[in-house]
Length: 542
Image (tube, rainbow, N blue to C red; front, side):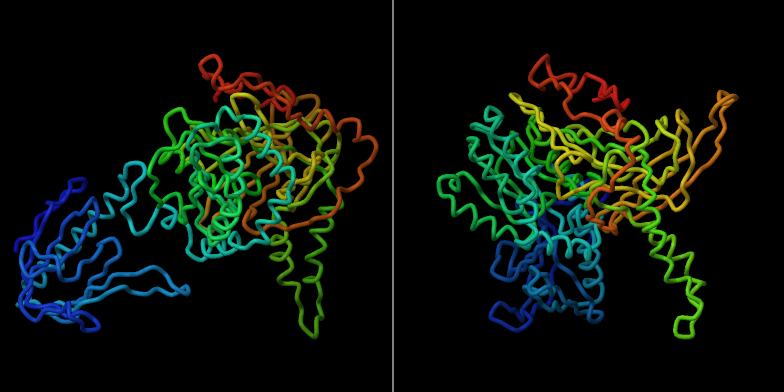
């Protein structure tokens, strides 16, 4: 039978039939047929299938979902067709297989060509799906994230001890609870989707606030624990459905009025869950629906911390030994030195270490495109408040719950109550010297990688200062490349700072109490109109 040519973007004919000499199940069963049968490619409710029958109408013999089916040629006139089943014990298994005997080589070749064309159509349709349906065997998540990274990620969050660590972050959990309960009007009688539900705690909060129904989507084994926890609260459980799967893949019976999630990682973007949050928005949220949280901000300021710099540099002293059991290690000292400085430092630091007012980069979850999170480029510009050595860039974040009744910020700022995110500092291997009033410029570039994190490229430069500075020019530049996936967790208490810096700390660290207009007021055109005077960050673009 002639195989039709398929142009990209055009759907195949609804049915395509081939005569085959016989089929045999592996292992052999009563479904095998030694007589000629018909193999039909067709769409069934939007799913591409391969079915075998004694005639054009019969469906008694095996059928295969082409999203997870492979075809192998055993000889010129014999092939094997197998369908993958779900993973079991971390090993790939197959739900069924058959051998297909063709009458001649030409029919075998035509069948394989048709199979390849139909598989291509499955992939093409998967990239043009309407909201709420999934046809591809490989989701968008799987196509951009290493399997090994995803396996470790879901294993980590599938353990109760890690969920407990997050639940016991009372700043985090308490702020979410307050944001939901204080904004009952946003949740009452509404459909809610909890993206990456974990233990299901946010779903329970939404149900407490009167949600009509909550769909708790969780991809890890924690979904089973969430079901148990929710079932243990029978008054609320009737309005909560736990769905195990990735938001990129699952199907929901209805659209959501509200998305709720805790997608933030270190530096806001680590683990790349913000992308899943945005995908859930595009797939499930009704137009003008709400997102809790709706906005995130990354705050940055240069810092001076001689203790931290010496601590990191001294780690590489081991490699300066010239007679380590008779071996000279010094040839690796330079590599080890740079390696230690490639680790971002995660700890709680004293805000008096900051040497300039912070600036902010705003990410609006309600409007940003997923692809914009792949590459984040932030220009830096500060004016030093003191004369000192700058050792790098300090970063933290906050998120806004823009409820109709109350607007709340969840902050991870230095000096605020500590969260399990702490703060993050990128330490440069070569400090730069500045004088009071000297301008510091640079760039923070975050490039997403397949291990669910980012490569950080940091550049800081000190511009000319004093007479002649108006002509411009750069005096010093220092650069660093760091891997956000591999931080140095330094959970020490904040260092005591000189008293001279104490008077400036409140001026350098921005306040979180910013007047915010509700989206329901004045048409919601300006979510945040007041500029951040302390940091120079403005929200007019939102």
